[in-house]
Length: 182
Image (tube, rainbow, N blue to C red; front, top):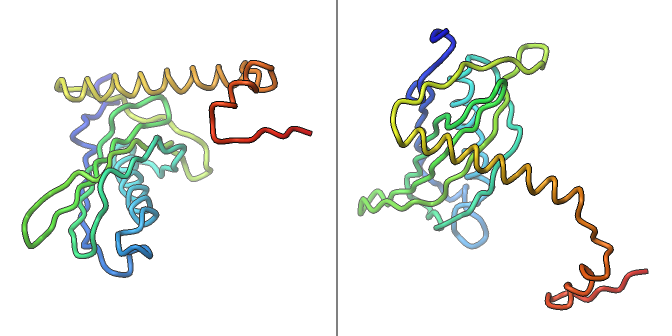
């Protein structure tokens, strides 16, 4: 049965790219959309490498841009499989940028992409099980379990929450909105 399992290490992918003026936004910083595109590419590479299949992005967990990336910095993204289900994988991605003149490195963001393995017909296929070999990998796996449980709880709450109740509508008074229902 161990032959249907792979290590986290076997999934690891690292890419680096020099940030050019063509990657910048109107404020002179690297455009977040460009970084998201690179993150999607590395998530695809990581998931496909691990599963041996073509993979598609099913969802992207919260992406918080912690620090801006400057033109001329070297961006390095590191990705690995943090969790596997039957046909899906959660890929953890860490983004760092380095000022190549000073050597100063900053953590710019981390995110989690859920990828699904597909065959040529577009049908989801099974992925190998995950061999967890150190406590950091255990932590990452459990963090994925917690995030998935919170997402299911939010979805359950969404289904049962009564947006039209008087209490809910009155509660909106504490926010910067004006409710004018017709």
